Amino acid sequence: QVQLVESGGGLVQPGGSLRLSCAASGIIFSIYTMGWYRQAPGKQRELVATINDVIINYADSVKGRFTISRDKAKNTVYLQMNSLKPDDTAVYYCNADRKTWGQNYWGQGTQVTVSS
Figure 1 (spheres, rainbow, N blue to C red):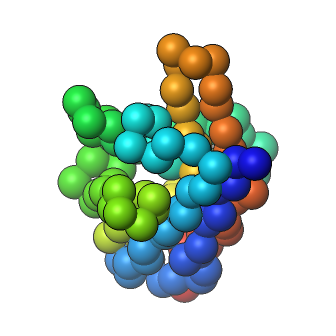
Figure 2 (cartoon, one colour; figure 1 turned 180 degrees about the vertical axis):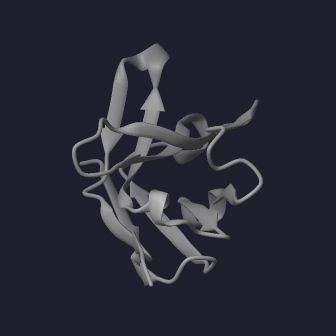
């Protein structure tokens, strides 16, 4: 059974930082593209960042502020978020993707709220 369990969300003031974690189980972690997506109220889910052995990809809106990383030994992917803005407020979802196998999995999401 595949599980992606996010943690680390919360309320933070503008300019603050948070680190999200996503612990994966039930997959061969090292061969999946791991990613973070977010969905704000009334908006579509959008890509934040993805990482695999070949490339790291960021949405333009988070470049220079967010950093995605992974620890293969812990089967965990992280999202370090700095200089947070109110527009970053959303539910953040962890994703594991292996297109060649037709497999795509989502976590349950963690709320990030940036507000003074």
